[in-house]
Length: 430
Ligand SMILES: Nc1ncnc2c1ncn2[C@@H]1O[C@H](COP(=O)(O)OP(=O)(O)OP(=O)(O)O)[C@@H](O)[C@H]1O
Ligand SMILES: [Mg+2]
Image 1 (spheres, rainbow, N blue to C red):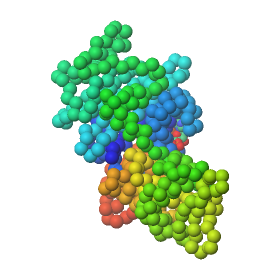
Image 2: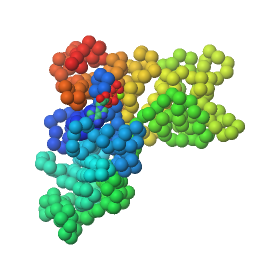
Image 3: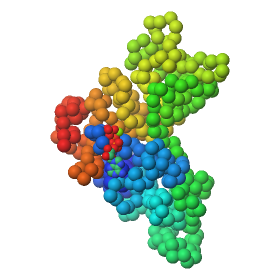
Image 4: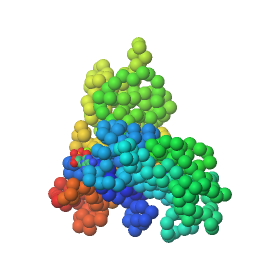
């Protein structure tokens, strides 16, 4: 399964320039772990980081103009860090699978003179086989909608001596000066009709660009959880569905699917939920006369079942998380904001273990990104998994990895729980 080893966000709300993990030009730090947890006080930028993932996914799906307005983002001017003139930039450093050479994707979104957002720069690059140092070679590069893509940017592609980045920069210079750009035998001139759309959306749907397509599929597969218990109480039309949607309002459909296609996994979920929440026995669905689905919880103490409308918020949430983690085809990246909300504090340690077990599992689970306020959740984490966001005097955020603080790392090595250290102000006292 693909893994993000690091990412950088610039000029996005309070995140003027924040890097987590490894980048192509930042190789001496450790890559992100399979589960990454961001903590910090109110207003330090946790939701902004979470939304940076959502913004990139929305840019791919809907184009940058719409992405700036979606999910209450309020448009480009509100989204860009106040007082900054440059573009909003996002860089993702990722690997397709364990042995693959890492790929860097860079996106810069800016506004034109009329204030309309557009894609200013986009680039995908990867080191050549055997290349350990130096700049990776670009296999897709666009400035202001014009640029170059490598033909057959397939796996194992070898660049010819004279087809290094110099040829790319000459081509781009030619395109931008309006003179005819000559395509090389392995390069293809690209010009997008709509500067609000990402090139990876357009070229990523073409078979001749497998690396671009793989990256497009990777982002398309991201799952950002906007789960609300009330959404899970809605009554969807019957019909099995493979994946839980972002709000969780198809919980019943996923139960139908799991019961039918993966009864063993579903039974395992039931016994896990029974171990965590008192009284819960069987969970199943009932179809109403008008074809809607009722989610039915059988409480061991009562003769008649309860329906999701009557179930507690925490029960619905734990159930939804367990279903997500048992998805037979999990998303490459799973982002959850404050999973602790509404859950009993003694469940949080187990929940953190569930998330980690999934992320590090042999079957190749999702990489997980979590924000939290809860020391009990953090108690179950190792310092490498935890990033602390804080705000500097100018109102912008900076981020540190808990393991980079030797005092913290030593205290955890001696057996002190990380959440306790956080509570005692060792992590973000300032
Ligand atoms: N365009 C912007 N430029 C600079 N700062 C901004 C911008 N937009 C929002 N902010 C600031 O960013 C802060 C971070 O908000 P965010 O929602 O990411 O914090 P959070 O860590 O999730 O907080 P909480 O724990 O309360 O949920 C806001 O409080 C606001 O002050
Ligand atoms: Mg928040």
